[in-house]
Image (tube, rainbow, N blue to C red; front, side, top):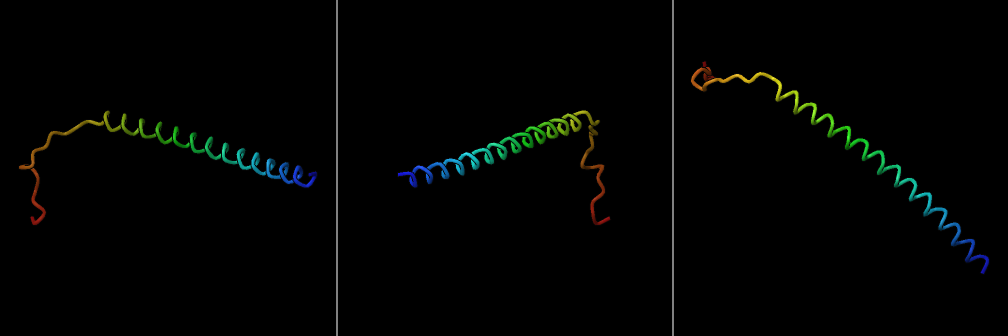
Length: 65
């Protein structure tokens, strides 16, 4: 009976360690997702703030010239 209890305690300790590791991994991934979303928003805003040129395809020089 003591052996079974010790085995369960060991398994519980490993499970708790694994859970903590997974929590840390999810936390780091969420931080990275938030950073990437922020950078994406900043790039989108930058693109919107750039002046847009209205060019006609007739003004383009064909590639063979």
